[in-house]
Length: 228
Image 1 (cartoon, rainbow, N blue to C red):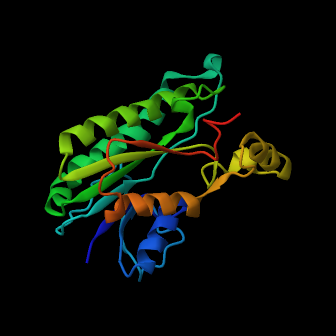
Image 2: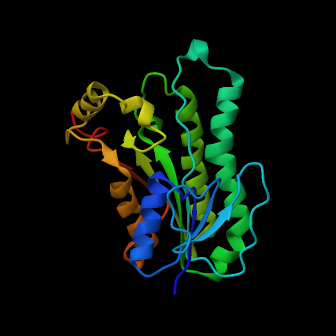
């Protein structure tokens, strides 16, 4: 039976992915600050803050690792502080690095295996007030490509770049019907993404069906980056 680790798997995209793996008959490993919505009988749960606490020791091979923690800092340049940039970089980049360094041996023992990171459409498409998060996610994409080169052929590494997605993290951006409708109108498909949709793509990237895919940023943005 394959084994997968989801970091930040107690809510949002990570939780939705955990449910898909559970439906496959897998008991995923989840690291998060709290169990959130998880049924603890269906997962192996480890409580930890990935930036500030010791990470659990795992003694089994890993066939996939998904790093879900992220941030959304939206401020104009005149309002941004150095700490905003540091906070975004720490959670999006250094947290991922810490996790990958900790479990790289487990991933090599489980080869062929897969690592999935998350980016933002704002890296490629300039967006107002996204300076700090776009800088951090740009670093995530650079990290992903370098890892993909270094770890091939045994470990595939890819990133999913999202536009606005209905998760707890983005809730304040679409917390009224007017905001939600405006967000939908900006997308050619006239909807915004949701956690289950993103989890389906992540599930595919973990599977053998994507065995010829590595070093890629896959956009999931309702056509926003490509269509006008």
